[in-house]
Length: 255
Length: 289
Image: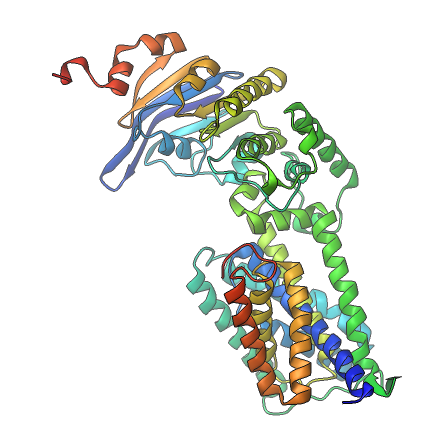
């Protein structure tokens, strides 16, 4: 049983088959990229594996548990958390407040507990951890900056920091470098690597930017027209004829 | 106009602003977290008044105890509304509007069945007499409302900015999707929002019970004003609601003193229109109405 596995996943929207019979396995500690040309079904795939869509058939399992169709906060508590392309953050909070809001996986306080029995010890813990994460990700000087005053690149970094605060074992990133300049991209790539190396977090990312994926991922899955086209190391993918054709068109179609 | 009239007007405005703040803050919290307006909010205010009527007038409990008990009792009604109305209709604004307005009518009828419809319930004030300030007189009963509001709003502010559950509540109001990703349960937070919302409306109604006629339909005018306040303050903004409540309190009191209360309501709504033209998000809001 793989750490994270997708089995025969299919999603239909009416007559349109957005994802057809996709399977893949991600091992613990891996950084996996999912790429594909426009309309390949990347976003649908991402929404399926992160529990936002319910698959038409097939399933997604995480640590042996089926998570497809489960409520997002429950999946997060299991240890699999996703980010968004848009900055999904609390704009009226400071960076530190944003990161310390996460409810830890083991915190399952009832409503009453949450109101009256607020646990100072645990709150101090989560603040400490928030500081650790923010500093580790190189945002120490922005600790007390309001989130809506951050640049786009920093807002995306904050999104990753917030995801980390839930202490995930699997981090799912939706186009983590979308809309970034090359400097910001380099920072983000570096950050993702550091996260895996320091905390052993498994990373699954869907990304448009080829260079980023090639630099960052050990293994890449290529989607095209909703199906899995290829899978392998960056070098395999770079020289894979089917992938080149999917991106650039087949040679003989030009004439 | 003499000094006494001016002092009297300011005092009346502060008291009215306090009541408005108490009612509007509850509405703003509920709207912020659920993204749905509770059209039975006025009936939660009314329920607070009836808690005082039953516990203090009928059963003879101390007045202040009845006011304090109004918080949990009406909060539980709010929680019931969340479970039975807002949770099943989440994301469907029209259904939420109709169901919550319907719940308001049901509450009116239940209260009317039990304690009568036509008769106004006058509740004896436990604090007869009043304070004389520079020729103006304010009854002790009214005077109680201002500090009560200050204490409750400060307590709410502390809860929302210092306590983790309060921060989670604000997080839900800012971006529910992101909040869920942080492991925050939306269901718990909407429940908490309606508890607070009901509690504040209940205490507001309880404090006003000896001052205004208590009938099953008394909540209506306060609810309408609360909606105006929440829109002026910026939907979902607590600070905005408090500021707008006192502005509206002053507008209503001053216009009512100079002309009459119908004109006062009209001027209040006109003020809302002007604010929305100049700043479509309301005074403190970021979301367009």
